[in-house]
Length: 66
Image (cartoon, rainbow, N blue to C red; front, side):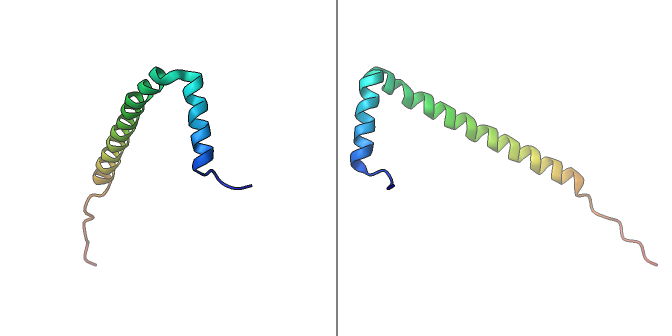
């Protein structure tokens, strides 16, 4: 069983256009962009939280001489 080539992708695209219409597909682009942007912002916020938590845990240790 082979992978998808250009002819298969073109057939799938034609079927999607026939089912949903061009207007609905045009709405998907901006919605997908907003979803990706929201995901990117959430990941960056989580990274900042993780860095702040690690910064609080890593306090310099005091050295004692024996």
